[in-house]
Image (cartoon, rainbow, N blue to C red):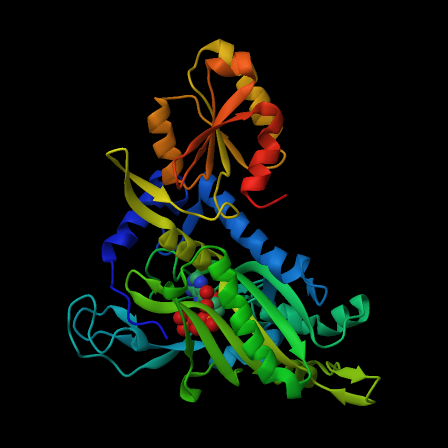
Length: 440
Ligand code: ATP
């Protein structure tokens, strides 16, 4: 178990500022004064967020013969959420500060109003976190719809469809990435907790007797995923929920926690949902949601192990862990030491000068690399400044085209972390970058 991390509040400010300044994450609707707790992902952020989702999909679906994907609807009828228990229990305890009237989530404020310091609150009442809306041109009960607060239910309601179409048998999983919505009482800490966010969830259906073993397997597999992508082991720890704190569907949940600037907090939850969801939907819909094992002649409702993480929250953790300030050749720099699979740009092609002679060979290099790597192309400012700008957004490799390139058909490859520079023939450039990124 890792010890309490030092809190580093200025790190959150630095990363938030960098994210805005360099086009990762903008506060939403800023020209109208902003819209609390919503964010837009800019040109670099959208690349990185796509990479986070791609790396997750690769490890959870592409590399797994036992897991298939799904993309279910965001809007759903009340019946789903009545059966899943969300209508009744997906709520947080809401209190009003008696002095300043601000509203807070009781379990997040330690009895003291973060706004005015008062310790007097109204009695907590359950506040349902689901966004309710109307589907179609008529109002009234028949038209009520909810925006999903998790993607999981789409995987349970499609359990029989998936089982009959892809011929999987337990243990097998269904994975999904998609927008989810929770009317959080106190959204906070940049994109850590927002009302609209993207979830990456996988429901792994197993024979009930094997559930504990698979739970342990997924906790370790998911922890290793973060370490493989560059989060230091000592910035991660596991936290097992006490029975009293479990969600309504859970038989046991372990969180992977990350050392955020404000201390340890949840990054990903891995729950054993038991047979709760399939049983509830089978009862409510009248459709059998179970599995008949022909080898043992037994019919049973599988248990579900669910690793669930916000893509946006994971992206934030990767940014925080990657942020470093160091000194190179007597000059301080900010560098994001992002794994190349996550970096918004993997390669930057930098003509040494704006002179037209360099343009054609620079374009040639860019076009050589573009099908294989997300590339930036930057011709403005001195080469030193341009290296710093690429370091700051985590670009692992800069490829500089200079006047010698016209003669020797070679370019300089600069490594973000070591700042080492080597001369590489253009003919070998692609192979060299593929080798450096472990792709050959
Ligand atoms: P909390 O109690 O902190 O509000 P939770 O434990 O209910 O959250 P889960 O339902 O376990 O959260 O959600 C699974 C994962 O989804 C979380 O580990 C987190 O990565 C992500 N997540 C949940 N809520 C949000 C949110 N409002 N914004 C961003 N990510 C979220």
